[in-house]
Image (cartoon, rainbow, N blue to C red; front, side, top):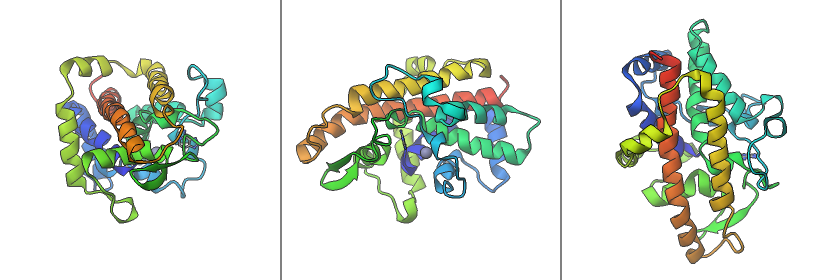
Length: 265
Ligand code: ADE
Ligand code: ZN
């Protein structure tokens, strides 16, 4: 996601944390003077250049034509989001790790729990997850990956990025609250049943497979002539319900894994 998507996921998670996890999160964030998860949600993108070798941690290139994730094919040397989200959640849970290492792990967990829910972060069609697929979206030249990272969200929620990819945190938090209000108790129970870290490895694979399936069935369809207002309207109408649900699921699942890593479970 872009900065708005990551902040929305973080905001939704923040309000779903159990009290024990919320206190631990607050203590870790305070090490660097932060007080909310949205403030660290895009850290991994902002500091990508200073962390060479981490670019591959943000996504997993499951071939478009493949039915699902295969670790040996799609995650060599643990160089993918599935392995790294699992890894950093365990560092965060490790009481013997240093507070600084656990804060860095928290930054990664918040970011990667978001990205793994972005459909284009779990697919490749020899196009770098849609980054090389040029489209005209509502009159502006962009690419398919960016449409899913931010353009649809910005169009739907009337948000705009400021200089250097900055966001209006208050405006984004208000939109997050609206999305959150639409999450039903049944969805909550289905998306994020209470568990333990013992099953984390299978859940992160499930989330990547869900994203990949949505890329196959929604994101990569109707791309014969990706330009014009009619196409943009049609694409927005089909992508938004998917993106909305993925942001909501990302938020409640992030809260759940933070509860498991930091809470009483
Ligand atoms: N680069 C290569 N594949 C990618 C993907 N699926 N998402 C983001 N960046 C990528
Ligand atoms: Zn990312």
